[in-house]
Length: 136
Ligand SMILES: [Fe+2]
Image (tube, rainbow, N blue to C red; front, side, top):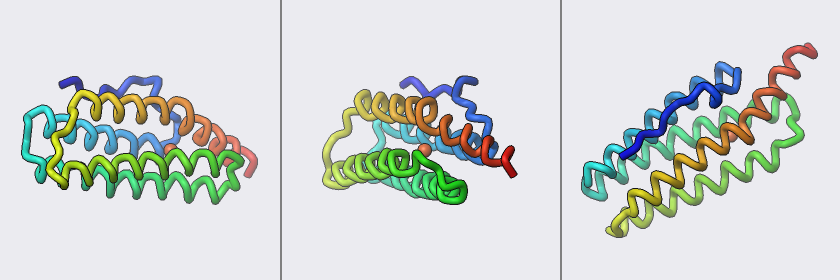
């Protein structure tokens, strides 16, 4: 199973956001490992639950920063967060209902989402945070 690999283009330049992303990626990789080993649904579900908890905390930190600087892209950015949380909660429900996971599809979805979100959405926020700090 391919791991999510950190590449330097993912660095946003915000220590807060980048630090969270490193931890998030290690948790995504723990989930991939758990699925790749064919662990039981209840174990995968626990790993996924840890990921959901941390993701919510991380999104909360980003959203607090958006509010602090009155970020113009706040609504669109937050709606991406809300949508992802809904999708991973659905995945957890299906695991808890005993359904088999499509390991390849789940890992591809999470890898693509995280990479695209960091590159297209979080980087814009990091730039706005930097600009805000320079204005002070
Ligand atoms: Fe984000």
